[in-house]
Image (cartoon, rainbow, N blue to C red; front, side, top):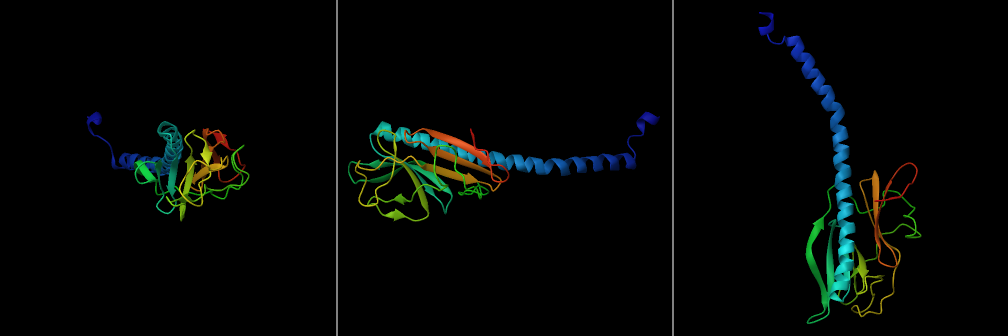
Length: 203
């Protein structure tokens, strides 16, 4: 019976060819989507950590900061311990960024609206004595949840200056995310493409 013959070799080759064409078209699209989701996830995790650091500072009546290790591509929350031996104490664990996520600007030179005058990562983190820690970036909040400039000499003491130009940038060289902190401590996440017309949009 004709209905029992199955498929011919030519028909199988056509099916295999169609599968190959569809796979060839869809794979790059899927890879681009996954890369975007990884970068977006990293940026949102850092933005959420900033909000949590602000809350930790207010809840503990001390300073708290987002400590970013630029070389290791990790970030963590730290709080200032005032009792016993003063020092910065890690609150929770460190978060590692995806291999394709870079801590940089991706060639963009214009910051998000109402944030910075020039694009730059946060200032260096400081140790308990006020010494600079190389290859780091820190956004520090005081006990009122206000972003401040870290002291350059001595331990934190509440005399730090409020700072309204904090922003942390992450990119995959196609899309750029920026987590900004206003003078009042409001954390916002922005996104733009690194090529073509610059268009910062809030997320």
